[in-house]
Length: 559
Image (tube, rainbow, N blue to C red):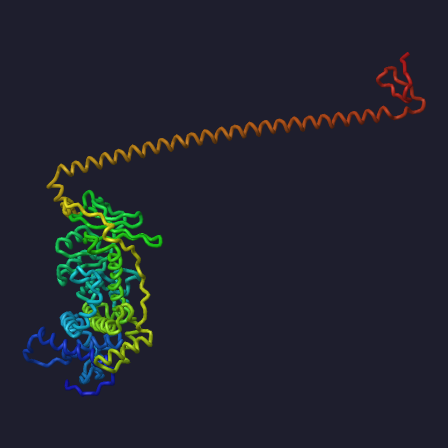
């Protein structure tokens, strides 16, 4: 078969696409020249590596969302002045499945370096504006992870998997995001979503220099992780987990709702080795507690600490950009190798978009958050002017279109405490103690058997006190129940006596009424009898009590 491709002319695109694709092509050529081995002869490849990997990136840049779109781009000649390759779609599928991300991770590193050099003056100006964000730190980096969306059940092994099953989740991304420069510093792919995020936290430190301030959420809350960062000279800020045991060693400031204290984390089997600082802020009835190893409140005041942790949301928005605006929410395949290729293509383009956003923020003299990423993504294809004049024209048009507008992010409020209000830390205060972590509990027991026995004795005493207290509570409860039962029985007995007395009284009243009625009837009957007249010729009876009184006042005598 003839593999000589035919050349077709590309379609007209905007200056933005031209510039981005040109930079990416130059970077990819350099990376491939360094990473690929020299050809050893044999049949030439149907599809060059440069065309394949650039097609992967351009597909994401142009908003396409399938592996088949890569094949259409290659066979249709839509990739610059590249020829039309006479290949089938299975060629693209096989190459991506076999090589995975290929040179894309190295391209990410090279592109980041070029962007930093290309925008060095802009980044320097922006860093001077944002230097108020933890000026004592060398860099400010947020670390977090994001789970990829579930894949479709198109392949045979996944067709019988029910909805919501973890097997449908292809993995998760663990990233480090530069808050000042708004660029990704590192990105790792983890195939198992159930793995603890703290297991991959140490891998992030390989690309970060000591002195870098780290921002992370409660998912990374671990005494061992805190101590490792403090020992490695990495300042950090996070939130305090509820019900964390701690011992207050010094109070800098306390007005009831807002306070700043130095504490030891942990008391018994698990405890941190380094003293940490806990800050509580109450605003509008809502209380938040923050944790940091920056012990000096004049270096990191309470107000700056709250604002600094609020910038941790920058990495959440960066993940949202990857998923919603670069199509990472719709994966091309359920194969990890293809997922890696799509992930790295999205991350590479996100670096470009974030750099453009930072440069626009400096030219417009606004915060980066004031530039809407969704609207910027929709309108990037309209810019056709390059150079400084092109940037100014872009900024002016973005203002008219509402792309540059005041951001609506939540503004975290915290009181501004003057330095004179803080209580000085005594010079003799101990800042380090032996650390105890769950995985070292057995070794600690072997080294200090007496302390273990003491802890067991204290626990036993506490258990006995709790058991005694429960017994007393049960006895008191039984006594209360007995009293209540006794009162209830007395009330029932009293009610029964009252009912019996009322029934007897009612029976007597009915009997009396019956007798009175019967007597009244007898009286009426005899009265009627005696009042009747005697028949003619009737003789009076010989007894007096049967003689009728025919006339009133007549005396009747018995002969």
